[in-house]
Length: 311
Ligand SMILES: [Zn+2]
Ligand SMILES: [Zn+2]
Image 1 (cartoon, rainbow, N blue to C red):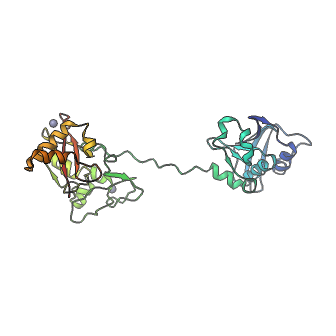
Image 2 (cartoon, helix red, strand yellow):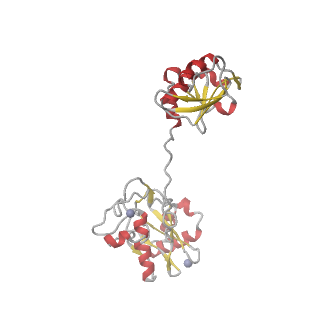
Image 3 (cartoon, rainbow, N blue to C red):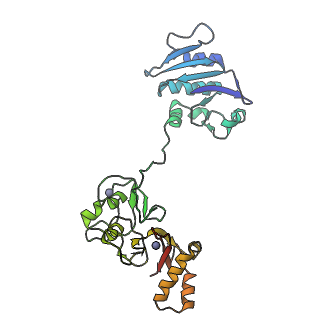
């Protein structure tokens, strides 16, 4: 922590008398008769301490305690008009008028704490680690649903999982198919590791389209986060395997996947609709509304697939 005063971007001497008055009473062994020591130790009335070195232009406080030591530093800044500089923190400035005197890199971020409010506690609050956005654990790998956060099926959560009771940082927000399972609050790890399946005999997708081996059916329905749909969700398959779900899509999103549009057109034709009705339908898809398309990609050949539904 540094305490210094700036004029036009340059450090200028602080009032040495003020430094002696403020720090003298807590200086171990007392201040010399005049001037400042090159370096000295502080011991405050609450037992807190600090090492100080520098001169009236630039004081450095190292290994400082919070508490009364910071009260001294705050008093020093109030009396000398100095700024308080802390690593990785904005400069603390007692007067807005002095902002223009700060070196350019400090100017924008400096915070003004008026003298009446400039206390040790105010400094401590600046030092205190600001609440960080929480780092969340890496999600399990879902081969059939590669990015469940992007598709909206998994979202950040600080709640404990309804199944494993652990706070995993993530929660599954798609449908759950089981007689006695909680509708919400299951973590993606309980899906991936089969815990939720074992405990509730739960599935996360209603049906799978096409013929695939049993282990694929299990993996897709019981070990993969599902997705919300207007009707019962159906998982598409291709090349004898479950496809990877890429997300909800509207007409606009599908423009990039003409093979998916062809696939969707074929499925709509199976409904017995005349071609112009099918084309109207394909032009009315809405990612966030309805009808909505569900976009997949074959894990083997890369073909894009889609189906659509509505209420
Ligand atoms: Zn869990
Ligand atoms: Zn394929």
